[in-house]
Amino acid sequence: MNYLVLVFIAASGTYFLASVTLEPKVNFLSEHPQPSLSSVYAILARYNVDPQMPIYQRYWNWLTGLVLHGNLRQTIQGGPVSTEMGQRIFVSTELLLISTILACVLGVLMGAWNAMRQYQLSDRVSTVLSYALIATPTPVVAVSLKYLDDQFGAPIQYTGMYDPREHGTVAIIFNNMEHLILPTITLLLIQVTIFSRYQRSTMLDVLGSDFLRTARAKGLPRRTAIIRHGLRTAVIPVMPLLVYNVVLLFTGATFVEYIFGWHGMGEWLVSSITTNDINSVAAVSIFTAGLVLVAGLLSDIVYAALDPRVRT
Image: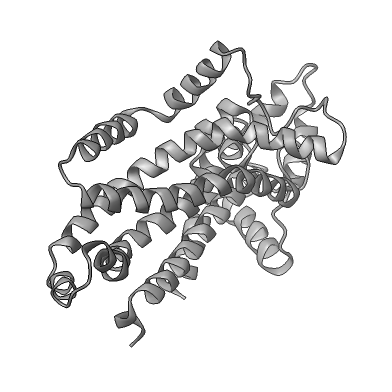
């Protein structure tokens, strides 16, 4: 219930902020030939973004339409916001799915592996590379991968979801998978370094714990004791970070979407702000607030599954 209240407050606050700061009228007045002011206000009134209407009335229209009919209104271009959002969510999901799964698995394994080899050469090299990647802005990583690909004659296509010149379902699927390679590597490098750093720290705490020494004293080999008793304990503190990072990346992968030409949620948020699209910004805020709700529930479920003390 608390999460739902927070979603309502976040979405309402964003709607008011967008309504106060964005000026959709400018979009129409900058057209050539310029339409009459009366026709502009008529369009804005139809979209429920007319600045001449009191803001509380616009908010009430927007809220009742959303709650009673699931109506997210129209974009500034005139299309349904719900249709645009559905397409964007699909694109972002496809873009993030593989990189997220790989980043979670590899991040946990790399962090645990480096902790077991603390201060050895592999741990030091991994630490240096991780901090170098964390300090590198996402656009630099993405553009560097594109540059390397171009230097080798562009063997990997990377702009857009697929080449529109491809025909046939199978050909489009394979072409789509090829276009996923570079953005997936970009997102993977960014996420896996962060996850592995956190996992390494929690694993080091576990390696010095009493219960692990007790398991070793009972005759379990070090590797078996760590995998059977230590790894699950070390993963528990990292789980909330993993879940929130993964879920909120839907609107956080803006640079990757822009650079590789994927029209997902992050790109939509930025383009909606720059085009004064109040209804789309409000829709993205609802989606993001809903993601926080989902992330909180997932985090609690995973936490309870890993830690028996929470279930009692």
